[in-house]
Length: 413
Image: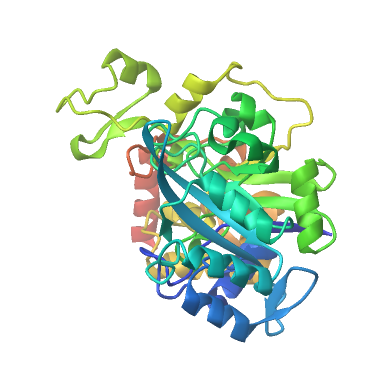
């Protein structure tokens, strides 16, 4: 069975998340997006695991459903490990996936002895991420730990500020139990393939959604039986007949693609950054070294290298962003929202529209401009000001002249 999965979202109990991020809305928006298997997120939070136990019922092995919904939930949480190792403060985020509520609760019991699980859906623990892996595997070898957004500066496994240079440096003798890393929004497989460790493990792409509408910003496509164990086996083996592809952000749009300093609105390519000694040319403070620069420091392959049996990927722009630009309006406007839902109601899920439905069929529902925007996004014909130092990149599909024409046409109508 072919399906799309997103293994990293948060609940309403995580900081900086929408209060609408409950099980009902996660399930609803997963279906709108075309995601069949969605993370529950935050199972370490006591109130959230209580809601999970009360509301979700077992479906296929290791998966759960809400009522009669077609959406399947998989039990996940993200943990922030902050600790000292090798004379340096390390800050590593890790996604943990569990096969049952009983095992999730055993993980919670153990972690509750180490830190406060009540304060945040993504708890901060003074725990070596290697020890977290050991705890999880001791409870059940069917669990999986995935280093999250592996290249982001502050909380990535390979991050410039607090990460490591390799999986082995971080996990030592337990490295063989790391089967996958998460690309993050600011990187894609083409970048990570250049790093030695990026060719040793599966590359997963997830949304890290903090609101239901952000589900599926990135995702993974499988063709397996619909079960926890079949999904994990596909990840572990990297069988291209079972793990078909990943769906990616344009990495330049991510928050940490380039080096930069947000306070001074400075963003620089790795080459430009090197010329300034990785110091802000305005204020002289250290730049936040971004994902692209970090890849180049760790890479042993040139840009464009594709490993043998690599899992392919496709890039997308979220549909509402395309609709908004085609209408030259904000993504929160009522007109954009109506146009977006009109597409979903008449054509299918967001992923169907972005990736597979013919442009002519889309045009028959959306009109020419939106269809053209989707076509250009599929072809990669976009312009992007790269993201940097916590600032998302700015992506555009239409030229300024085309945007002025859209405004004129709207005024005439």
